[in-house]
Image 1 (cartoon, rainbow over the protein chains, first blue to last red):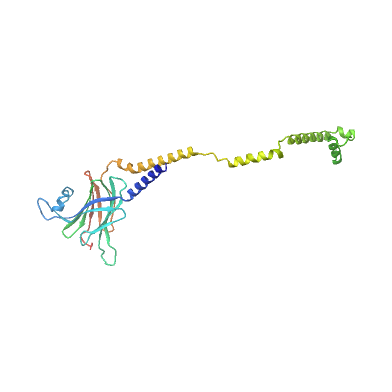
Image 2: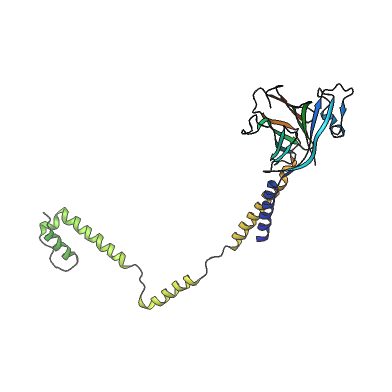
Length: 154
Length: 148
């Protein structure tokens, strides 16, 4: 009897631990999109992998600035500098459901005054389904605009 | 007047302590009758009380032995009840555990979507849309100057 109760308690404990120890596999691309008069549009090798996610944009040149496969864990934000001006922070907010994950994407630029804090250009919360993609674009650069594509990977 | 003295005399006569009942005038009064009835009730009550069984010296040893036996006897055991309660609790914990472990997998897959957007910068606008192909887009429109 005690064995059955203990087994149940252990299962409950493990299920609780499992839900707290959620990790999310994510691949992201930071692509600089520009208008350079290319016909047909040009994609470098990194951008070519996500060509379907870029074809509807009004640009003709796509160059990969950064591409990385990461694993996001709850309570552990991932921060990376995309360009000298843009810093991106990704944070897994919730992944309680097996097929959907709430991810916070925050892009900041440096302050005008060095004493001030960095400024948030965009902060968005995305719910990314299994195998789903999301993109954040329109971040102005010297040559065009930065487009960040996020893809949830198995 | 039915005085205390008369009452004592009537009571003594009732108990047979005094042969005389007093004068005839007193014996005819309603007070005399009421008092006599009260005495009769008291006598009956006392008689009933005296019929309560008592434990005599000869029975006292047996009486105490009964008490000792009652104290020494083990309390009624509820093993069956506790076993059933334990089994029910174990089954409940197991069911809750299994539900917790396996319930999340049955939900249908839903598309990617944008839950919220915000910006700190003045002059910057943010649009977002969820496409049918499962990709969500957040698009920032930034002014050409006064950013850096």
